Length: 283
Image (cartoon, rainbow, N blue to C red; front, top):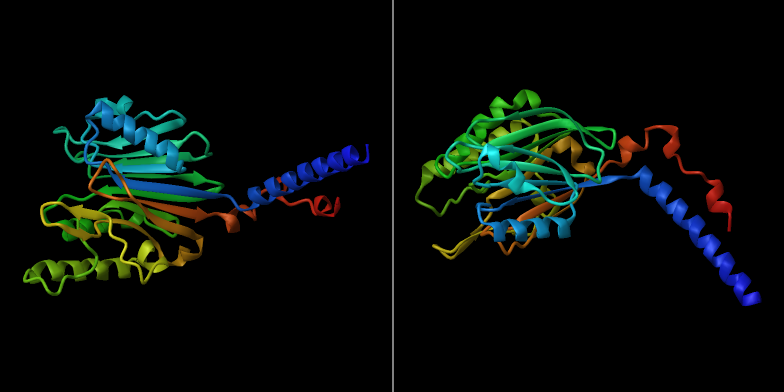
C-alpha cells in the first residue's frame, strides 16, 4: 500500500510539474518558418512527397518557391492540418510562390500583397500577439541582384523590425572575385550595400559565421552554392532562436528553417499567461 501511495503522489507531482511547464511554455512561445524551392509541383507524386515532408517538419509557416502552378491550382497545395494557403502565380505556369500557415497557430492576417508574375507574396498580420511581416520571394535567373534591389526599394515602406524575408534569390550574397564577370560582382556588392542601408542581415550567416551552409547544387557544373536566404532586421537578432539548413530529396535546393522566439512580447501580454509561483512550491 505504501508503494501505491508513493506512486500516486509521484503522479500528482508529475501532473503539477506538467502544468507548470505548460504555463512556462505559454510565456515563451516560438514560431518556425520553413522555406524551400520545390522546382515545380505539377506532378501528383511529387506533391504527395512535399506534403508529407511539410507535415514531418511541422513548421508554423511554410514558404514555397517555383511552384509552377496557376491561380486555379490552389487545391494542389493542400496539406492536412494547414488551414491557410496564399499564393502568387504567373499566367504561364512559371515561377510561383506560396505561403502555407498551420492550423495549429493563431496567425491573423491583416494584409496580403503580391505581384502578377508570381515572383513574390507578402503577408502582414499578428502571431503570438506580435506583429509580423513575411515576404516570400522567387527571383528570376537573369539580373537577380538588381531585381532584389528594386524589389527591396519597392517594399521599403512595408519592411520593419518585424519583417522576415525568405526565398530563392538566385544569386550569392558573396562576390566571386575569382570570376571574370566583374559586372556581376559589382551588382552583388551593390546589393549588399542596399541590405546594409536597410539594416537587413543574412540570419544564417549571422548565427553561423564559420559554416559554409550551401543550399543549391548545380548538376551541370558540379558545384555547391548559396541561393536561398532568410533575411531579417539587425535589431531583431535576439528573436532569432535558431536557423538550420535541411536537406531535400525532391529538389536541387535545400530547405531552410528559422525558429523565432516571441518571449519578450508574450511576456508583456495578458495576466492570464503569468506563471503561478505557488505551483513551484507544491512539492
